[in-house]
Length: 268
Ligand SMILES: O=C(O)CCC(=O)C(=O)O
Image 1 (cartoon, protein in one colour):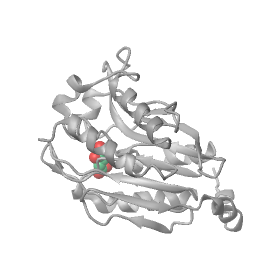
Image 2 (spheres, helix red, strand yellow):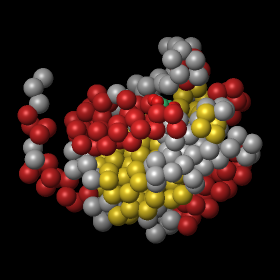
Image 3 (cartoon, protein in one colour):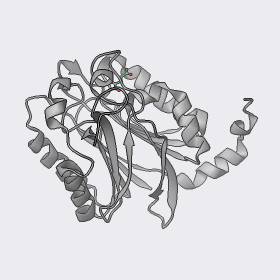
Image 4 (cartoon, protein in one colour):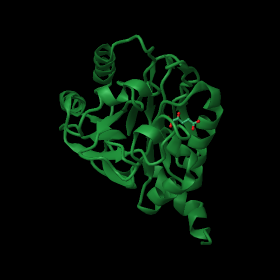
């Protein structure tokens, strides 16, 4: 499976519409890939909490429509990263926003949406403004070879919670896709957690971060693609805007799990 991981780098001053146009251009340039992945909250900006409410859109709003159209035009599976979703009604915490990621197939059909389960901010930011997702989302994603690969969706801070990935693995996931807006201050954790989630679940991982400074928080880059055996197939070891293009061989995952059946030794 040919994967393009789009590490967008941007500053707050850039109008969202310009960024959407720029991201769409990068997606179009990678039309020959089987899967293109964008980062977390890249249109409204990852740490721009103050403007989230005014930027929020419904699940079938203009952002989703633009991304569906892009996937259809390019004809490839597009993980559009996440956006600020306006929920139909407030949830148990009284909020009507969510950090929601969207996955489209090459016909522009929405294959899955995922609402971030673990909200980042320790009482401010996401937990104050957003509802937590409650669903573990695992979806059959076209693998570029005529088949599909069971794929678990998660977002950024979720990486710190291994139980979510174990639930995805139990639901059959052999690939994890993780868009993020992870700060530079803790980028070593990002790199480590991504590899750990892959290795402990014997699942491949595509983890896509941003660069630039958002609401005075410098972002960490270091987008990476890791195999189920923990081999790093590619890494952007910087915070600049770039697209990581990797041929990810998913056909070896089952074989690897059979040869090294660690998951069968779990004691619950
Ligand atoms: O866990 C971290 O260090 C960063 C998480 C984060 O920035 C996020 O989820 O938006």
